[in-house]
Length: 323
Length: 274
Image 1: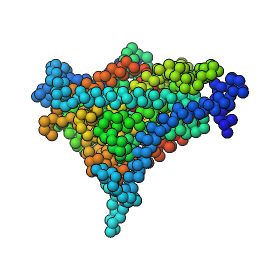
Image 2: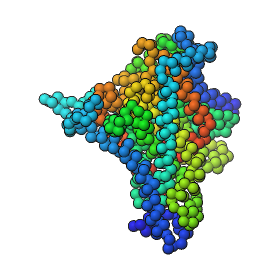
Image 3: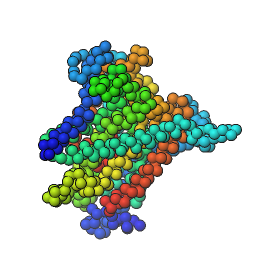
Image 4: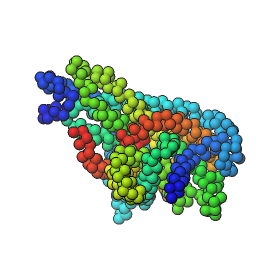
């Protein structure tokens, strides 16, 4: 087995044959030594806490006393007392949070993908000031989420906000809107701020894909007089689809765990609460470590499922690359 | 027709620029207005009143919060890079059994929802006696930065030509010497890129900082801004909040403008979100 592994090491191949195996062995030993610290740290700060969270979800632990708890099986998820059902899976607030999160992820990622593609196409064109524009669109991405949420909170203020002022002046609305408090607009507001913040990320990933496309295809299309819109849908889009897919998946995974933006923008409001906000509220505000951990575990399972699908799809490409 | 498309193109460019910049621009002009002036909308700077900036530092330990953020983000970057470069050498240059599986497991960690480790991490930090301390936050933040640091650095490590370490090995150098003498200098540009991304992640981190600190003196900047309150519960000090926002955003914007190319390279290499 070690023989087949050794053939994978190119740099050693030109070294004298006799030294190969001992060198290989020492290099593999070194590899494990180099990896050990990272693996130990990650096991301690990611693996162990995750395992404890899952364990807590089967207990009645409380935040102010984490050492004294009892195993209660699936009761945090679903339990029945005298014909009535209790637990996370019967809590309408949890399902509302699930719905909010899924809706948020679908709508925001869709808008970001379309806008990101538009921005990427623009930045891919040669025009004076292109470098400046690329830096400018990075700014929303770099601003801390908490800060952007606060900035938008202020702009969306129902009495003194600049957004209401603009819309009133333009005659688009008759009276100021309480953007973050009104159940009809709150989630849309969250989506809008997220679009503002993360479209740059999408645009940059798509731009990177665009810049790797061969130029001669476009040359040929132009000589043949094909309409640019047709070129985009027939040539560009199919070619950047793999990159687009990767970007969409990364964004979707991110959107499904959204916390900062919603927490700062609308606090613990039920209208916009995401799964993560719900879990933290149970854990910290209500001190219900059991229920909170059950919610956290479900979030983890949902994301893990998506990640596994992604990695199975991505592994094929990675394997080819590594050879 | 030609002119119409050109004008349309430039209108689009201007719209994107305005949309990207306006919120920050508005935060800046708001931060220079104070008192009742804030209760009217202004689109252009009309006053240059620094009282909000003074108030930020007087009413709360905001200087301490900034220092905390610098300590946390700086330590996280240093630790992530030190661990990341050695691990990336092994992952990128040595073929060993279980390499792909391990690398994908590490990448998997970067997909963890933060809230999924929250109760376990809370227990861990408390049992180490690190609750409400900066080392506790540094430890927690490593979970967010270490996986993508390893991943991106491995990608860069793979791209280096294969002949590089050959000569050193023929001369009898140990792998440790090869990493330090041969790869460390070559990896500097990649380390700067990943270090910047890790810095931005740690600087912006909110959920852990909110949950694992208790007192205002131990808070980093994001929870400090999120929890900033006025004299009464109903009166939010918008001027101060905007001033604080501008203060903590300026260094990040400066970093982004200076290292724009590097950041973009890092983002696209790892395809990770900061």
